[in-house]
Length: 242
Image (cartoon, rainbow, N blue to C red; front, side, top):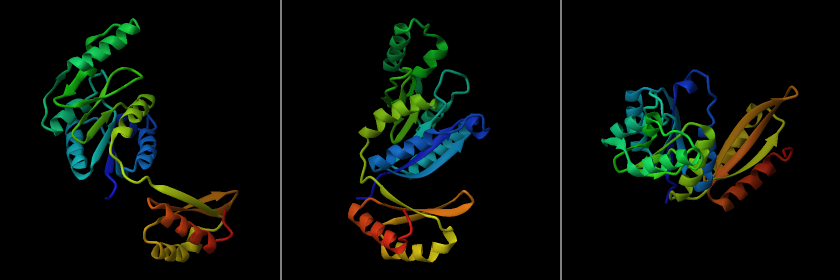
């Protein structure tokens, strides 16, 4: 069976304006590789309700899982929960279990549970909560869409609880071989390797160090014996590497 597929939707004007450096997709991509879930797409969009609704419908419909980051906080511009509810044709409102989680979290810290904070207990109908051990406010899953916070340490904590519970496939394994040779000089040989080892994906990534051109060659596969055979062939073809 092929591995499940996934997409990541990053929501936030702060990413598109360059005010905030995006790192959540990078983190989640690494976790998904280990879980055997193949990431097919990453998209960044603005805090605009129609845009979010359209993107959620399209991406959830095209992949086994859609993971979102951002826009589920307490302020007026946190509109992701409402947009996701609309995308799946669900109602949304304050849910008692989510409200209780938040109430207990703030009471334990002696912090007032305001109406603004109560907004974070608004959950689409029929959703499953995603635990948030950092700040209390839960994320949620609606069908195959998993909605999580944008703050990196909160996002990572949610991912740690969510992803291991999802059915995965064969983890993608990779091997790296570095050459101090320009990428164009080895293109023909690399093409032949790819032809000879169809179960393995080969990538070439050029770099410059101390004024010298080099290339990182990466072999990837879910079949470990096939990968090791391809990697040995790669090393034999370019013995000057390391």
